[in-house]
Image (cartoon, rainbow, N blue to C red; front, side, top):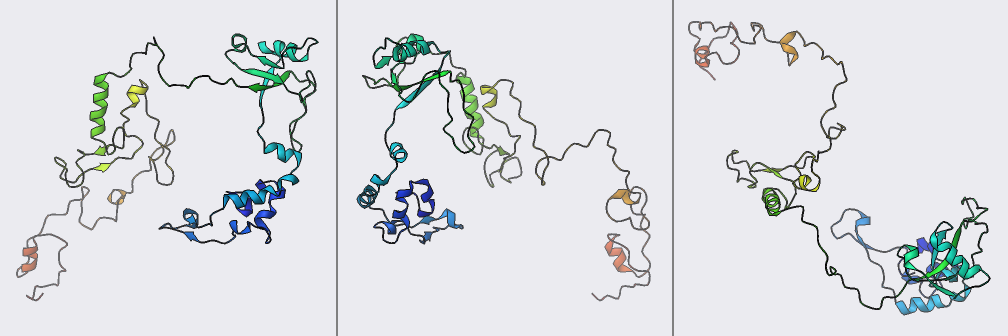
Length: 327
C-alpha cells in the first residue's frame, strides 16, 4: 500500500483495493493516476523521476485498520509471522527418532532437541506439526494446473526452531589455523601491476594500442597517440594466474558486419579473375601493356609547349590542340 500504484492493486487483498481507487476514500489522493515526470536531462519517460505526493504513514495505517476485520482467514494468516518447517525423507537418520518422539505410544517432549551427530551438524529444536499426518497421502496445494497428488507420502514435516546464539559472532580466524601458501608471489604481483600500468584502465582493463601516452603523446609511432583496444582477443593479465593453460575463446561468428568473416566451406575454389585489368576497376586505357605500364612518351610536336611542360603526366592532349598562351 505504501509502494504499489492503484493499477497494481491485484497484488494486495481485495478488501484493501477500494482504498486506492474509491473517491470517498480518505487516502485516494495518495495514488494519483496522472502525475508529472521530471526527465532531468533524460530522453524517455521511464528514465525520469515520478513526482508523487508523500504518503502519511499514520493516515495509511489508520485507513487499513478499518479493513483488517474483513480479511479472510487465509489472508490474515499471510500477514502474520509463521513457523519454519523442516521436511525430511523416511531415509534420513532423524526420521525414526522424530517419529518415535511425536507419533508413538510413548511420546516424548513436545520440543525435541536435535542431535547434531545424527542430523549431520543441524542443531535446534523441532515440534509437532498438527497439519501433518504420518504415512498418509500428499495433496497438492495447487488447484489450477497443479501437480498430481501422491498416494504415499514418504516424508515427515515438523516445525523447526533455530537455536539462539549466546554470544555475538565475530568474523576472525580461529586459533591454530594454518593458511595455505599463496598462489601468487611478489614477482607475479609486480608483473601484473606493471602490465596494468600500460592499460587503458587500472588492473586488467582494455589495454592501449601504442605506448599508452594518450592523444598527441605518441613517441615512436608518429605522435598519433593511442587507442583503447576493446576487442575480444585482448590479453587478460590474470588469466595465466587464475587458470594455468588458459586458452581464449574463439572469435565470434561474423554477423551484421561484426566479427571476422566465416571460413569458406571445404573444397571451395575462388572464381577466376576478370580478363580485363585483373578484375579490379575499369578496363585499361588503350596503349597499356600487360604490366599496366604506359607506353613510352613520344617527343613533343613543334610549338606544343604545354606538352613539354607537362612532362608526360596525365593523358596527352588531342592531336588538333595547340597552345595559344591563354589560360
